[in-house]
Image (cartoon, rainbow, N blue to C red):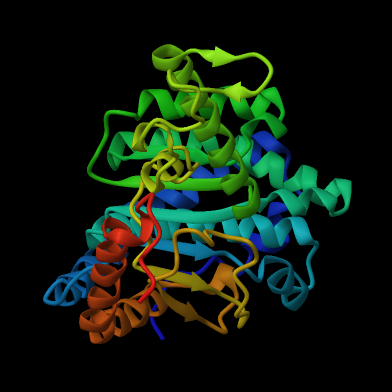
Length: 326
């Protein structure tokens, strides 16, 4: 099977290098293995065939199997995460060239902070070192980079460069790459509800005043004075960490797992779920092509599901008055 993979000596030699040498090696691997050469021509030929059918607008990925990959190669877990990072950058370029508009990856869950400190630190180091590498890639592949999650849980050495990268790429609209870090859906929904309530409270205070003993109060003493006082679906979705992207067309999870692991629970009700037994660092162009072909085969069905969901959201189900009983 023809696909991109790490050089045989990469994993065994990578850990022996210092961080500056590792970063230089990463740049060399990315440029030689991904952005140029015969592999780039081969990808374009494959993607030209795939583009005959519908292309998913948004692909989300749960990147599972980095530690198992390291175990099979008999190296430490850190080397597995490094291999997974390079696989992610390769998949980023693949999705960009294929014509996908949004790519979202689950990089680090809030629950992952409970893992061993050295393992958490390794992932944080990779996130920090990936930011200048992404900045370099943006110059060749214009894209918007977005970090989704509770970024206040990250150290300033990651949060500040991430915010700068988001700001510098905010005007790029051709492709949006979202990295979910310090994220889970429970926290995202809680954050959206809190922000929606805060925004609505501020709005009602401006137009109706406030009662210090009983909370929000309308001009006539009523708690609500019409639909403007209610929190609607669009208010919640506007404050989601993932508010910049449409719901995923496809959710991929590697390493043979079928759990969502608290990832995009709000957004994936009408998404096609694809589970691959391939470990994430070995996930390549043929795996992506198979997922896209399966999406094209099921596209009419999921198109109807999404349309029905939109109609339901815009209908009487979310109206302020309950349906009448016959």
